[in-house]
Length: 543
Ligand code: G16
Image 1: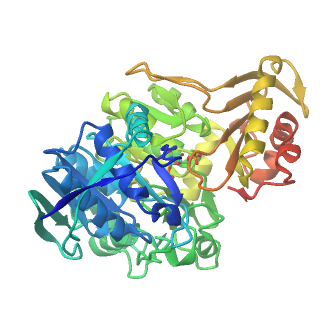
Image 2: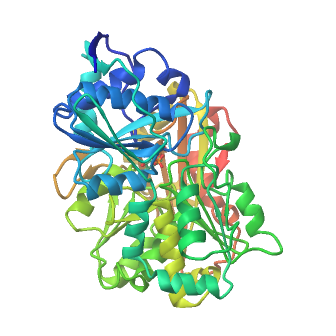
């Protein structure tokens, strides 16, 4: 085996965002772009010599070629062993599980998550730490620093063997184990949940529609739901991963999962609907004719997690990202457990999970997970829901309305303004930040401001401080507006406006969400002059 050292120079813009480095696929295919970043992952984490890594991705266009490059580079950098998903496939949660189970030195996951794939779509790469979670900022900062000074990378000259079959081969002294992507993940799910109860539910005629959105969860959902648990064949739709996700947008929300929404709103709707994203870490759930918002789903899962064997009597605490609605906070108070508020980015949950302070975590962006791994986990959330429904007996829509009757409802929506010029987005945020000190006590569109700040997070475990994580404006009636710029886009800037209004337990929980939020939407516009700064009179995506 011949290894070579290739001279290179730093490439601008290789700074990881909310979740790794995401760019247009064409950018990743430019000479040296992937190679530079992979070398910097190794160099920024103390080198690859003697180490073991998990490697896999969501199957999007360029996935297998990128994995070939990473195998050649890991071997040339002296790695001892690589665990690679067959055909290069590993869902993000399955990769996290393999990293933990095999006690590896981390993993490299190839995905741009919910972003579209294909030659003209997006691609991404991220490093996960030995705890199985996305690298915390001190590691991504070290990797980024290396990208600014890189002069060479190491790579094997020969293409590796075919990774389409399970088995082992070597590249130089590095052993490559190609593994079934689903097996270990399924075993973990069986340990967490009451599979007998879920099997009995399906045997009794309960019907599910799981939309894998042509993405990585297809093989996982088909084997576990239809195979092991006995859901009828055809319960999983769009089940075969395709490099461009069937030309779609693998983002499980009511806008992009419109096929599932149509089925769940149809005359013969199944009892339960769910969708997952490109790399299998996000989830959306629905009942007949009813979308369950991710924030409500987190609150409900927390309230009923005791019905699953793994969580019965074991909830130490719960954590949510700052823009996620405060519905779960109310549940935590009643359960007498702490509720942590973190910046957006699953990486911020890692320390809380490692320290045993949080057991369940969730985000408004359709992510829910637990201490079973260190990533959010789409199929896990679906199985927890099925476990709860099997043991509780009520349908999900009834469960949700009973929950609101008991806790009150946090009406919630996110308005996204996509691909706006970066300077315009930054000007909007700067102007808003400049007004914060004067806002408390003023009345905006009929709502009185009670609090206004720019969210800063002091990690309770390592005391690291993360600042400027989004503007929070609270009103005296309990409503809230949060604004921040997305860290996962690849074109211009995306302004996210998060809107929340609380209606207590005796109030009207049946209103249209946008109508219920109308005063808060008006206040957001007045506060930030969104139309003036963006030139848009309405959001591009409303979820
Ligand atoms: C990633 C992060 C999530 C975050 C989401 C959206 O998810 O892991 O924590 O909520 O991006 O981030 P942003 O609002 O900055 O675009 P994923 O599923 O894209 O890896």
